[in-house]
Amino acid sequence: MSRSGLRVLVVGSGAREHALAWKCLQSPLVVRVYVAPGNGGTGRIARNLPVPADDPAQLVRVARKEHVGLVVLGPEAAVAAGVGDALRDAGIPVFGPGRDAGRIESSKAFAKELMARGGIPTAEWAAFSEPEPARRFARKFRGQVAVKADGLAMGKGVVVCGSEEEAEAAIDAMLVRHAFGRAGATVVVEERLEGDELSVFGVTDGRRVLLLEAARDFKRARDGDQGPNTGGMGAYSPPAGVDPELLAEATDCVLVPAVRELARRGLDYRGVLYAGLMLTPHGLRVLEFNARFGDPECQVILPRLRSDLVPLMLAAAEGDLSARPMVEWGSEAAVGVVVASGGYPDGYQTGFVIEGLGAVPRGVLVFHAGTRFAPGRGLVTSGGRVLTVVGLGPDVEHARLAALSGAVRVRFDSAYFRKDIALEAVRG
Ligand code: AMP
Ligand code: GLY
Image 1 (cartoon, rainbow, N blue to C red):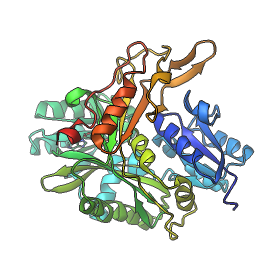
Image 2 (cartoon, rainbow, N blue to C red; image 1 turned 90 degrees about the vertical axis):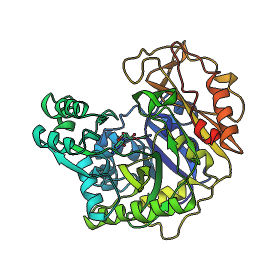
Image 3 (cartoon, rainbow, N blue to C red; image 1 turned 60 degrees about the vertical axis):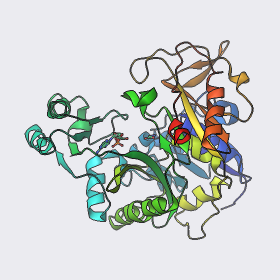
Image 4 (cartoon, rainbow, N blue to C red; image 1 turned 90 degrees about the horizontal axis):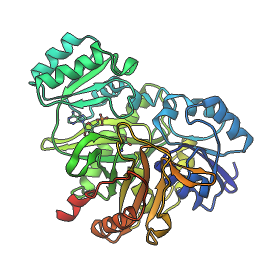
């Protein structure tokens, strides 16, 4: 295949996909980037295609029509819908796993079994479809457990419990009242772990793993890790307290054995494998795997990548990373602050005009998520997480101030953001 004049299709509509499109556009190999369905920000730098991220047949059709040579899957919904399978069947290289390999994210029970077989360190666990045995298991840990819906539940399917009452309530919500429908028909109950969290990412061709830089994300809605869990209110990279030995351990004891286990089951995983880790006093433990880049982690990792992302994604998509495409990182730190709609992650209003983007200081990056262009009104809000504002700097402290200096400039009705993203790294 020709290595220049490449047309890339990024599937998804978040700030992660805006960052992916932005990075692909810097590649000398790329002539055009499409985003399906995209948002108000991707529409400014690339061409949005009005196709849902979870519609394999339509995505194959537009990829063929536009002569796309590489498709990048952003969200888990695309993976779980079998978009990767459909495109690969059509002969189009895809950076992102097929549905079966993607079960490492879409089924927590599958992921847990894979970890057990691969000797990957994780919390003690069991899977249940009946409430009473699940309650008994939770009592064994005096209610200090995490109760997890097996399937995809938009980041809301995990309840971290501090008492037997809380554990029973979570088990009953999922297994008795079916609060998550089919996604919660099976639950994983696991021991509750304590420690700092860390997101690690490996690019894989199904055999080899190339580690990317790590990040830490902030999932709670409010400062001081208060408030409900969200899709992620911010992230930074490189994370404090993470040394090369730890990253080597994450590669050798988590990512490599996970890919090996997938391959042993005949699953050809091509794309990014993301492990959410907890750094406990007894060593690292895997909380979850994701079959894609993290959001907002992607928005702070890609601006730190100096080398071209496209050859790396192409090599993985084509199943051969043996030539080890160059991966070179800048020395700068990156901090990303998510500006969200008031009320998110619960109910919120949309359609508010977004102002102040022109006043964001030079060098501060703004990746759009819930934005759209409304004729006659300009850019308006269209989702819970609206923008990720990313600051770069010689260290985390400067990057953080840059990100905040951008976030305060962006204005729309009810906008809010966390002011303590990455503060832990500054305070030490
Ligand atoms: P998951 O989707 O499995 O990563 O869970 C979402 C969040 O719940 C994680 O980022 C953790 O903050 C928390 N969590 C998950 N599992 C555990 C656990 N075993 N112990 C403590 N917290 C957990
Ligand atoms: N930042 C968490 C996620 O992407 O799942």
